[in-house]
Image 1: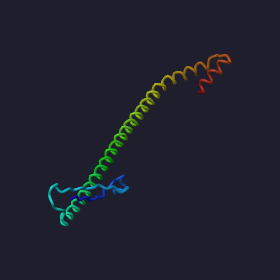
Image 2 (image 1 turned 30 degrees about the horizontal axis):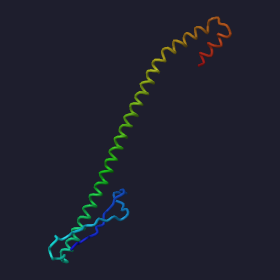
Image 3 (image 1 turned 90 degrees about the vertical axis):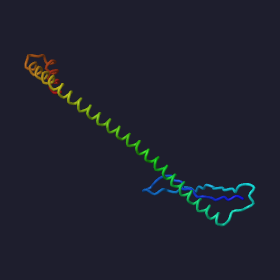
Length: 142
């Protein structure tokens, strides 16, 4: 004699607000077979116990599916958080590099530019040809 019980399985596709969303129904079959050679059959009480155990197994399997999905989501979240932290570090490094570059350029360019402007002012006062005056004036304006 054989007893077969169909157990509904919870399949989780994603969590919405902490509640698992059920997808297409899925079932597992629990099959119990009495040892061969024994001339007896399942009693109603045994079948009732089997149904209760099958329900408990279905709940346990459903919980395992939810736990597995939860762990997957946690791993994805941790991976995204690591990527965001790396992106933040990269942005901070880029910002620091930009600030350092601007400071160096500002300090490094200020002194030579003042010297060049001073020389141009002196040259402007000298007797220059028209073409040379145009060039010096253009340099002073820029």
